[in-house]
Image (cartoon, rainbow, N blue to C red; front, side, top):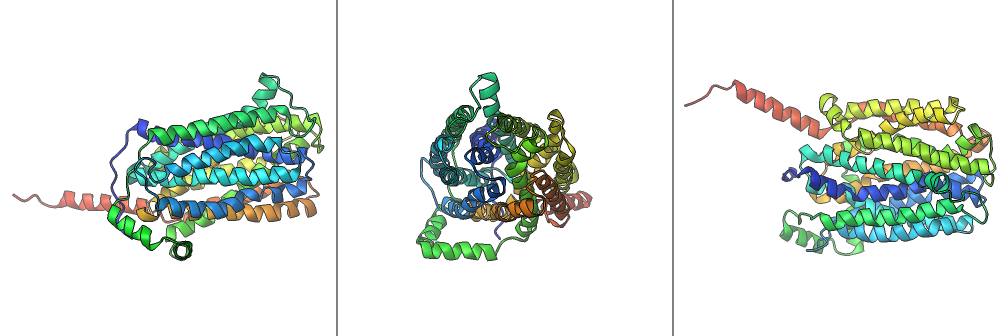
Length: 457
């Protein structure tokens, strides 16, 4: 692997501008995560069918992200740059899907809109991870991913709160009449506007570096032109994945099963455990859905607050150990939901989950970026997301079966399953090799040796 390209350090404002787009992206994801199950159940889907309806999210990621990563590595335009064309097009399509989904009249229509929404969000989001690797030197990458985590948390806080604010502050009805409540529809409309506006901010305030060697890049682009050669190169990339990436894949696998269980089943679990209802048409169920939005905003708010503290912690105890501790705390939070029957007490486990979420959005990517060749940063970031979407597919297939046949459709048990998976993910960090950490140790060792050498005249 060639040595990483040294980039000039960027000012705080530049890193801020290049990360603002994630604010809009996460508003879209937050609305999806907190309300997709609610929409499906309101339209008549049974609780054991919900995981399979959610399968759109991981499958579109599986298909879209490596392709977009591969294409964005081979894109260059004097005005649009390398990654920004995908930001802009994806945000436009996502905004359209956000407007359309809550207006679905049947479960199948909502499922189709979820496919379109998730594919569009993936088109926008995937190049953002490579964007940090493109523009920042190694010493600033943890800060860059932390900045993304801050905007992810901030966007998710607002996006998760939108339905609650619509119904309880603006007094827009959250009752079920014909399809999705009006408050949820208006929340999605506002989310569509914020998504497109935030991504456009990054697109039009941030420039990109051209490929390091433009002549070599053009020759490689000619050689890889054509779908057959492209598919061969993608397949070759899978075989040649760096060791650190494979180790992180195991951590990601169990982490994302845990978060997928949280997103799919929290509304049903809270409705049953706290609001004492399983009737998706009831007012109590819709109130539970609004409260879940508040709970999700809490864990995302913690994530935003912790974003800039995590790099400081990582400098003192290593990134792998930081991630291990955060996931341990998150696993305790997830499991504790099983024992809580009061509305306000549910905030406490969300604080722990927020810490795990902040680390999940920061540490694996910061560790991975130091192990990737710069010319394949976008592709491998896309491939890395396989280890986010594959566990979600596994969860979509198995969780409904487990909850129905072993736990009698009591959704609260999904929280215990998720907490156990997050505990396993935490322990798997002990096997991860951080190349940047080893490079830093080598530099320190060399500098120390030089300090003992006698001066020569």
